[in-house]
Every structure is written in structure tokens, then in C-alpha cells.
Image (cartoon, rainbow, N blue to C red; front, side, top):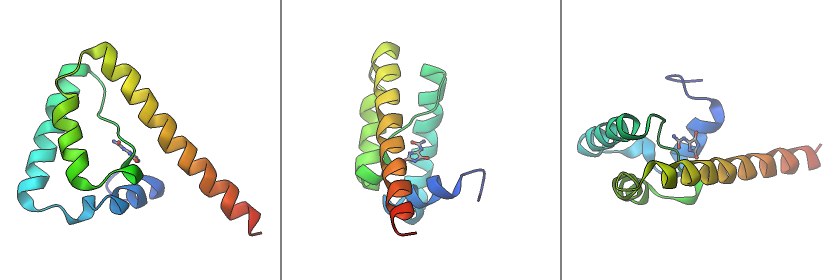
Length: 97
Ligand SMILES: NC(=O)N[C@H]1NC(=O)NC1=O
């Protein structure tokens, strides 16, 4: 774990390029994440492996405009995508044993 993130989350975020954010992008992402949490009462979730950092920033901006109902459904759908890819990794790694 680094900075409270699991090993899986860290890898997923790296695959989207979130480890290469400029200082400006970092501040923007931090600010938007705070606004999101403030508006909906739960954190922004997106399947990082299916997006690049630009799409994540745009997605965050756009999803902030949604209703709480829409975001609750969208957030759960994103968690499902993350779980699916993690399960596939487990199946793939155990098939190599
Ligand atoms: N906040 C958030 O979306 N986190 C995640 N997304 C992803 O692909 N892995 C995560 O841990």
C-alpha cells in the first residue's frame, strides 16, 4: 500500500497515467474530487484501466453535473467493471500455477 491505496488501485491508477499528472492537473483533480464528495456524499469512482487521465478528468467534470441517483448507479457500475478486471487477473494468474 502507498498513501492509503491498495496495490491493485495503485497499478490501475498508473495504467491510466495518473502517476504522471502535472501539478496543475493534480490540483484540478483534487479540487474536482472534493466537489464530487461534497455533492454526492461518496467518492468518485471510475474504472481507471478503461480510461486515460484526460478521460478521467473530463469524466469527473461531466459526472459532477449528474443527479445523485444517476451517480449512485454509475458509481456501482464502475465498481463492477473494476471487480470484473480484478477477477480476470486472479483467474489468469491462477491458471499459470
Ligand atoms: N476512485 C477510484 O475510482 N478508484 C479506483 N478506480 C480504479 O480503477 N481502481 C481504483 O481503485
